[in-house]
Structures are given as structure tokens and as C-alpha cells.
Image (tube, rainbow, N blue to C red; front, side):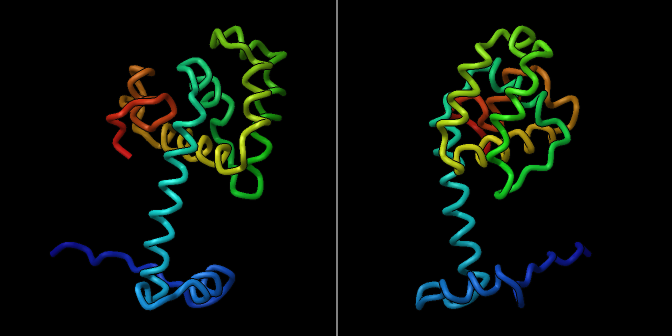
Length: 152
């Protein structure tokens, strides 16, 4: 017998309140609102990631710098600082990128763009080791480098 599907409940706290005030006739339950909102959120992430237009080198550099980093909605803004801090250590040369230009592009991005990058890097690191190579294909798979056939 298969294990029961885990149920996510929003019964208290700020998420429950946010979901409650967003209920409507079409989405009468918190669960329905959460599903709708997650669809919206993932659509925004996908569009922002495509708009970022990262090169393979830039995406690789971001994966290197963010390995093990724990960035959330409140801290994703530090992404340009994280990249800038690693430039003296040869990050740009290792990945054959223009480091200051990448930092400038990241600083100009909206928060949603930075969150999209963080999300994609987390998904890249979550891949099994053997699926992170070859690098160009795995970067495309998670959307860090544009690919019309990305699985997400």
C-alpha cells in the first residue's frame, strides 16, 4: 500500500492570514488559494529567469558562489554582494566572465529576478551528482541558461 500523500495545512500565522484574505468564490479554501498562488509564483520565477539571460559561465559562477548558501525572500538581495566578494579570488577568470558586469546586472534586477536565480541554483545543487554533468545541459535543465525544453 502506498504511503499517504502528505497534507500541508495553513492553520495559523502569517501564511494562513495571507491565504485567508485571498479566498474568493473560485478559490474558496486556503489550499486552493495556495495552489493558485504557487502557480503564479512559479510563473514569475520562470519569466524572471529567462529575462536574466545568463551565460553558461555566469550560471556556473553563481552555482559556485551559492553552494550551501541559505538565501530567502528577505536575503536574496545579497546575491550581487556575494558575487562581488568572490571576484578578488579569481571567480571571473575561472568562469571566463566579466565579473563587474554580472554584479551590475544583478544589482539592477528586481528582487523577483534574484529569487528566481536563487531558486534555480538550489534546484541545480539538489540534482544528483551524476546529473550535474555535463554542466551546460544541467544548467539548461534547471533554467539557469535558457532552454525551451527545460523540465520545470
